[in-house]
Length: 447
Image 1: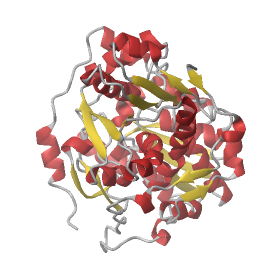
Image 2: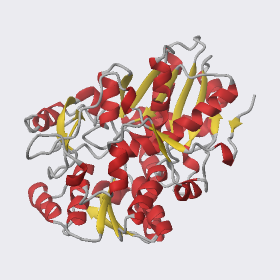
Image 3: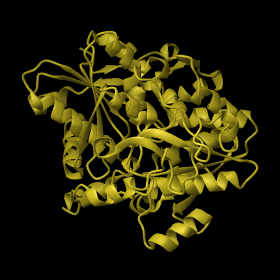
């Protein structure tokens, strides 16, 4: 048995996979918030390049990956598939546990898979400057890396609580030449309005997205890049699952359970959706989306049209949502503090293909420590949610022989301040914020 399954460079997938044509219930279109009619690419061209908008609305199952994008992805891809034999032994389970190690990228997470592609398409269309949001800093780090490679300027609006919790992510972004702004900020009308309204707020991804969009819309040479949620981001991340399918075939095993953490949904979808056609063709696969109990978009939200940002500037997306006004507690998995869920993942939940699972913060950190002690890699707080979900699955019926595959979305070497708080007993589990969610959902737009 090989501990690691590694593909050759020439085995890297050369196309992204688009699950939308295969969704049993289809995918509801994004709507223009003014007319409530399906929105066309021309309305979005002010903030996104046409190459990405074509992917966003593509009817094709496969989309070619440009050679310039592949050249950069191959700095770290293909990524290894690893059998977590030591974790299996510690859990005393008969389950086989595999993980796709996305932590080997230059910034330590899956995020560059889309950042490189987005920077390429913007560069190709003459864009000089990109704005974006970031929660934990993983996406901001990835886009900073990619814009540096393609000679673009980058401005990152980083959620304030993560800006304070994770100072070294800011250092990484600055190393690649980006400017990092804590959000909400005084630099945009949205930021100033939120500071006046909320005072000393931890911020949210919804607010940071609004600031980045406003910045892009008010500069002629600038467009906006989103790190999750949208269809084209999910397409870019499917390189994870496409590689994993080749690697699983080399082991002789096939996953019975696929697990990933869910914030906006792209890393989970990137691993899971290439396996969905197998499920639809009759293979029994349980897809588990692990989300924080304090920001339970799929398990505590509602499926409805909502804005992707707090200032209500995006198109209306049909997704599971806690309401665009919802500001989650300041958990340390900053990348999972988002009010909405990818429309693709939302459709898979609606169609009973994906099973959401909510997990408390301390259980997730305990799972991360166990993984570090057994497999040697310290996971990011977001990734800890996936590992906690895997442990639940593997120990529910420990005598059951099954194969579990999960996405190790990122390492936690820049997150040790969060681990320090866990060791000091200073992390606690926020209660389900039912009142705040109900209040926010009451403000959903009428469609």
